[in-house]
Image (cartoon, rainbow, N blue to C red):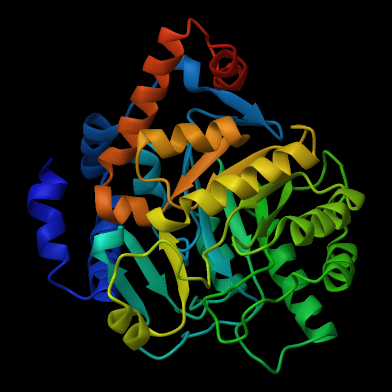
Length: 363
């Protein structure tokens, strides 16, 4: 209530990137304060053994995670731990540091509870970020999202070497790694969403079902057709990747009520938030069906309420991530979804998230 009545109106007087910077600076201060972290935990924390899951040998206290993009440089995972997230994913990190695209590059669509961004993978670079993360003390799993450096000159073998560098750096601290093969918020558009290129990349990363290796997930675009997705999944399964993240932002402008003139003025960029939820849920369902529910899936894209979270889980997601929903609903969204999940399970007389699909279908 405080966020929606006081904090959000103030933040929305700033442009989207200025507001994010303000939030980030406060979060950095809070991350260094034991008192503020304890206070955040009291206000926003919610625990229940019914929410616990173990995936890839990692313990997740609840299914709600912070999506990549919010904490690109790995500076604030501690306060995200304190506000009740079950895991955090930092990045995307790239082999070389980048300042990203020219500003303005983030735009709110309030009528649609959405954002359009073309940040351009701005980050401090893999080596610097991983060095920073070595000093972080977290009680939740840490994911690191890796992508190709935002530079059109880095192509072919150079692009693969760029990925491998970031991947090897990430292995030093990550509990799991997400390989982002689609970046619709950069000027280059798709990167490795081509079966031959993806096969070459995964061969270079040497992903195997090996307990000594960090679990590796592949993040897909929300704009893939079913056939395109199935072709990519075949490559991934041949390389025995450990799971999937669905989905990245969309280059499309479907389901928007924002005036077309405003959209034209904004121009290109990745769409996130409520309008892409149906796409994301569909892709999660396709992945779950194609893998017979045998590979863990992180569902992301448009989760801003319990109803959408539940639909994502029923489609096959084991874990969930939020970003744009957090901007529009505030940190209380995490506690709200977790609490309603527990209530739903109690009503169905089940004791774990994995039983939700069967119980709901039977009902």
